[in-house]
Amino acid sequence: MVWVWRFEKANGSETSPAVEPEDFTTRGDAEAWIGEVWKELLDGGAEQATLSEDGTEVYRMSLSAAGEA
Image (cartoon, rainbow, N blue to C red; front, side, top):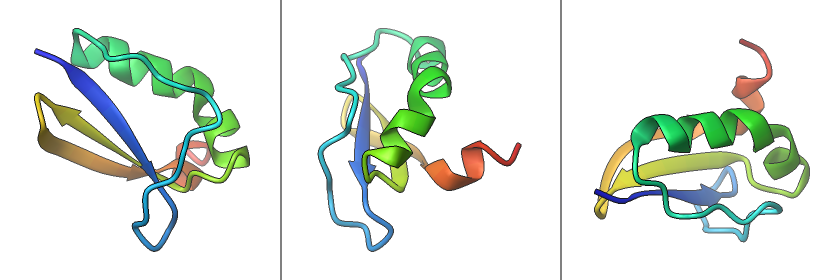
């Protein structure tokens, strides 16, 4: 299994992340990584992130909401 993040503007267009992620072997590793760098990603222009497993979208999240939790 490979877990991959995709980053988007609010309108859904893909954007390059300010911090380049790796391909993760577990969902937990992918989620831990974004929990550590979400602010840098948001500051770099990414407003949404989508997590996929082996090409299948698992969920999409707003990065601006991450800091409000």
